[in-house]
Image (cartoon, rainbow, N blue to C red; front, side, top):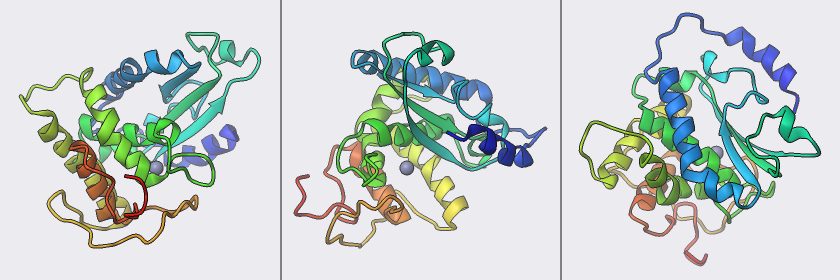
Amino acid sequence: MKLLTIFIILSVFVNQDSWAKVSREDLEMLSDAISKAYNDELVSRDEYVEINPPYGVENPWQYNILHASYVRVEVLGDDSQQMQLPYDNIKVVHMLTLFGGLGELELMSRDGLALIACHELGHGIAGPPLKETGASTEGQSDYFATADCLEKVFQHLPIEDDLTFHERAIQAIEFGLIPLLEEVEGVQTSVNSRSDEVAQELDLSPGYYPSPQCRIDTLVDGISDLGRPICWYPVASDN
Ligand SMILES: [Zn+2]
């Protein structure tokens, strides 16, 4: 990874005295929740997940950048000591990077950020359909985020409101991916609308994203364990 180069480019965007909607403490609670939700299972197969670890981009939360990413890190030789991993048998780290701009979006919530982290983790562990690069596709990562990840992570992320999982997950979409898509793509989406697209075949090319509304449809369907929506997942595929 050319992290030094990335760091130099990013330093232009440092936002010194911003007030985030989602604080660094929220991010730390989320990191802890993702770890509690997944690391027992992952460590048993010599894998591990971390958000913003010290061997990644240096302190991504300080940058006012609207971006999240997933990197699969192969751990070789005695890397695990240098990386300060808590176990020395780890072969693969699923590294999630969340930048501080996400926390500053007007409508972002801690649960919304959890949804985004779940999507990124999905690239590493959500399984097929896979992109040509070997990562789970965007659609599959979205589906995993609500069909599998969010419920596990919510168990370790307290909230004051007394909500069902369904209500809480819908809120996470409304205060997570919807404001992010609006800011980045300039597109309005809603949990109450549906895309009318019909995919004829799976698009596995690395740069392919389902349309913004199709992504929201996928998240909503995942909450209720419905199949993947036809806007990106053709009906002939085994749903
Ligand atoms: Zn993605």
